[in-house]
Length: 461
Image (tube, rainbow, N blue to C red; front, side, top):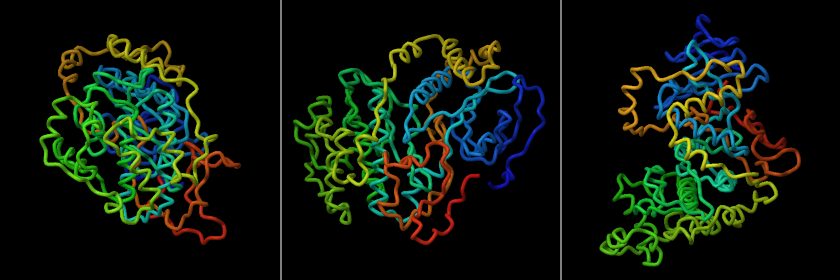
């Protein structure tokens, strides 16, 4: 375990309303956390909070602690955070980030601290790094993404913002899906109507969303998976549109002009717009990815279809021959119960006080000693700013998720690994997931192979 980072400074334990806590300053942000946690270093920050790495002295494991400031005094932040935390508490899967602990500390209990797994980096940084990626790496990353997505869809949850930076990975190549701030439910007919909210970072946005369809399904997540798969194969985005119009142009350039029956689900205005464009023949995926295997291109083609009903489901993608080395239906669990979005919709319509109270009650489940304190109420100044805040849209999603954040360069020592090196989910001896949230192993090289060189990514803690 490395020594505490220089940018973490302990502070006097003064005026805390919660016993057994201590305060450390991380780049000017005070973290008042349970005494069991030892803050190690700064990891990242965004519009909704600051994340640091910490050691849990109970088991000497590393974790990520995110501080969400004034969560109980801001109605917009409280409602968003409440929805995402309820989702994360519902999830229990190796390839989906989960909450290990929650706390709220300080004199007024105004700040919320969410403890999750600490991962080494994210897939975006891996793709952009000089780290060599074999076809086996691509298979394993894609398999874990689809395995986690199968679980999410069984919860009747659409992620709606799948992209490489929302896929956290470690040096074992374990992968976890994070950032559920835009996730919503699917009704029994698998169709969501009248959803106008901005969803999915542009490059990974399904064509039905680009074309302003007000009806979409789980297939939007499969399109995003296809874009991520393509980016792993080519080490650059497949559809890097700079705006809404160019995004559509990028899709047309690769997939070609759709047949009328392929876009029957989009508005008439969008169909007329496409009909008025110069026809595009598209490109063969083989010319875009000349070094990819036939099986890889076959699966990619199944994911990237204009018609969402023609895209493969997550179950069909997992069963594709390209993932045969890892596919194990018995070790690809589904949820025991779907997530109750009807309750969440009621919360969205409820008073701000109800959202803060609900969030505070969840914190009390982890810290019973908070009972009786009551969730802090909005100050007069906060009430005056409430309308203004509700109109503000945040474009910085980085560390905005309540999931864990990774902060390395992405260059990890994964070279030289083969299919047999990766743990197979469901195999004897644990397999898969790298030991879940507490896994911090840095190498799984077979004993017959020389030990890998030290990673270019320093282990966090």
